[in-house]
Image (cartoon, rainbow, N blue to C red; front, side, top):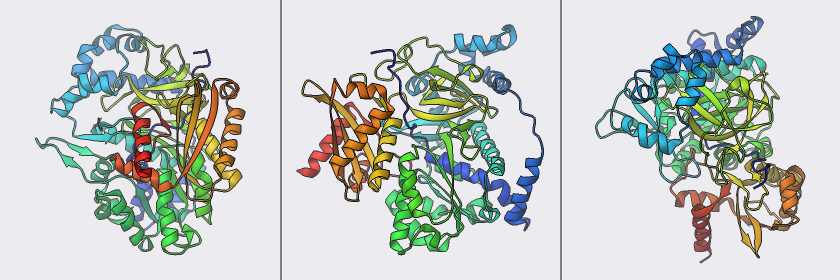
Length: 549
């Protein structure tokens, strides 16, 4: 491995889409309350303009995060976790409790956090990593795990997420949003809202969509939330899609929210079913699309084909572990982190000193707080939260686009990259290559994944591209290869030596959907992994071989 080992930019983790939905709920809650007063969207827009006239004092990022850490330590000192690591002594004896916290509390991933601490929360124990008993657990599997993760969701975290949503609402002053948008419905393409009660009856588990719905104001649920509780409780995603398409003409949607791949499928099916020229023929007031979960870059042109009116795209950064930020300025490259809602951020440089070749964290890495980071350096994100996560490696890799504005772009996952021979190809690189194919060949690639393997004593990359348009695999291969050579110097060097071949196989999009069904990961909250490795690649290849046979 060379010193450029992690010269990478990847898309993001597979965050829970329901937090996206909750963002949309909070985004319009403040405005929709006014609707009960018969003031409607005009007053909402007017109130936003008035707010914009006031100068709101903003503290430096370090001040916000110091306050967050102190509050976390104060709340956590009487928990089992806090007692083990001496939170009370940090607060009472240390002049530099930031330093003490970093030195005494170890870094955790999900497996270590769950095996030592969170399993006790599932068993009904109180005051394990956060005060009280955990009432909700979000089930999250992402793209690389087969078993569901149980992520604690505390009432403090629910309040934190709501606060982020309201902050995002006020950021609308920076966007040119038609006032009447806030009078319309919000279509949330999330997971099932059905929750499963534990056998003891002391907690609920399920998609974050269900947890969000259970804590949603009733008037929102009854009047503005689409597709509504009855459809959203349908456990089968394909059945929910059918019901959404069937009921689409009854709704006046102003805000759409969902992972791009699934949102695109729903919109395309509506346009096709009702023989529309664009989705605006049915929903003329659709003006906002809130997205997240994967890079939007490969999908952007496809969405523009579905719209005939301007739509504001707003990116968010959310996961089962919390709501972290949103795009706060039009045209900004980054997502603004919210620093005062009970979430402490640390950042580990994503390089060979701190991570091994499999993306596993090495012992004793150096971490940095928000005031210590630099722009254009790739960092793995570590969280301590009001849901009882402590120095928790969430798996995302980010890069600061504007340190002063604490804005980031999510450039990948610690375990999703291709580096068989030093090519250091990130998922962000892959997204850019697919976007180039879409634009240059005027096609819509809706899904793709890439795997690396030994090839003729050297190595090769194989691209599996999901496209229902006529697509010349050789033309796509050349564009992909040329694009990667242009944007990734390491890839370009290895293409002259160890990376001997690039192979492209074009498949119907339905194959990717069928595989998700085959693996039990079909639905709005699941995304197809962009990089396949190990057993996951073997399973995918066996699935394809089975189709041929």
